[in-house]
Image (cartoon, rainbow, N blue to C red; front, side, top):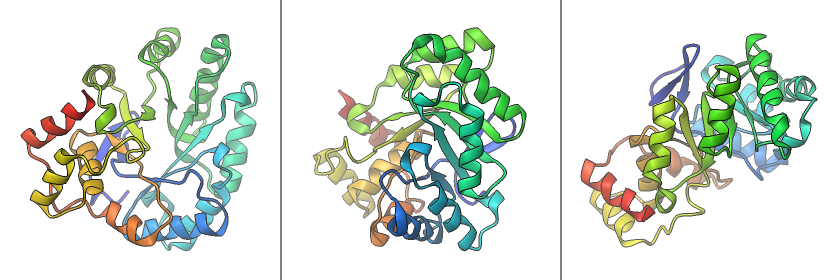
Length: 260
């Protein structure tokens, strides 16, 4: 993988770019165009899911981008209602994406029946062992639910993808992930952010960037993976343009404090 932007290590010598491109609600031609624009803007990490209904467009954009498959990190997710149909689901995802493997496969939400949790996790581990995915993890799991998987199988999820932003910052939760060696990946970075907050606007002005760029850089400087989404080419490019500045320790602390 082209390592010209920051990555975080996952088990199995997998490198995951800290900045990714979210594709929720980006479907059809607009979804395809957005992913193509993101790859042209420099993103090398795409986040999709079976539930998004756009794996085909994501896969086609990767092929049409001219990039090598190994230079793009692709995540997809298993819907919670596919308990017992995990293998069938990953095979359908791979067909739609037009690839023989994904880089990360996540359980999208904890299964509604807690008794299904461990069997589903074992199926993800089996898919990893068969090289259908390079790494496996979860999404929207509590720390207790993470620990349950590890205690039952001895296998730690590589990633937990959860809603995250400065106003949702939870130092304890951040530390719990780090202590367990689980990468924290944040989604909806702007939805739960007040981009007019005086702290964000002051720090943005100091670096001559936008508050949205500050929010993304805050994730990256904390080594938290972030997956902004947009279908607007200008915004897609702006969200990728966060490598020419970094936040000071004091600025990071000020932004952390927005989490109250």
